[in-house]
Length: 113
Image (cartoon, rainbow, N blue to C red; front, top):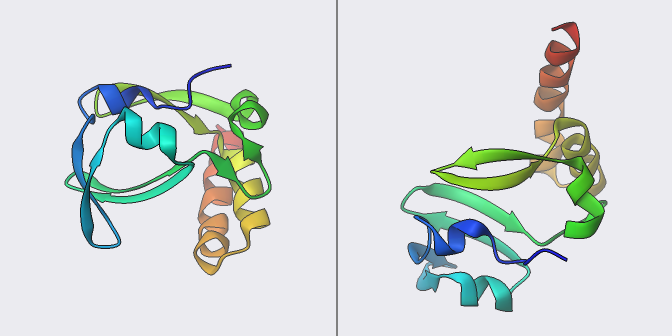
């Protein structure tokens, strides 16, 4: 099983200044290992790091639907568009439902090539 700690926790993002509910905290590998889901506001912008997703499960259930991308010089796994639409629909939050139409247009554009 792969480590739950993202590679960037020990890379250029390691120890990035972040806030949690307006309070500063140290974002490093030890913090990631103690948590599951993180919604961060960082000096680089907002990011959600999710160890488990409604309608998708955890890492082992989702890795086959992930694509490797580079983010700020670190390699990360991100859900592919079809799975992202599926889990956003399952979550059912207003912000997720709003994003689905846009994501589906991206999927259609890829299919048309």
